[in-house]
Length: 140
Image (cartoon, rainbow, N blue to C red):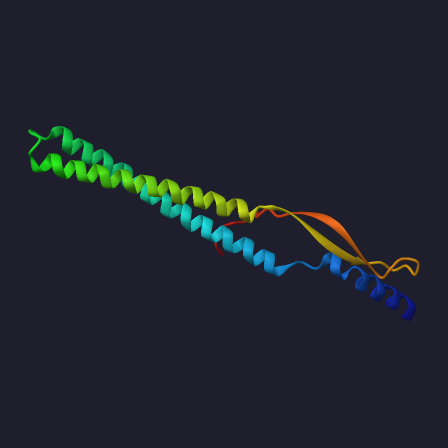
């Protein structure tokens, strides 16, 4: 019985680094996902308000009776402000997509494992391919 416990203890200690997870990377991925979601929500709100303001400004400007009317000037200013809001919303949406790509990035790193064999060095370093995909991005 003691030999069996000793064998299991050696096996689990040898594979400890293989089953350990990097919590720093998980935290960073979750932070990128949250930031991406906030930016996406902000971008959609800004783009919706911008398109609405642009449409309202164009409508005011086209229904104005003359070039000197306050409706024409106000409509032009509102259309210009709405267009600027839409362009800024698109820039924020692009930034959101960039943060989402950072969260699901493909990275190449070196991992190590312990080998129980007297002929090989106690620790081997090998290249590993790590792919992280966030499966649940909703807030808890």
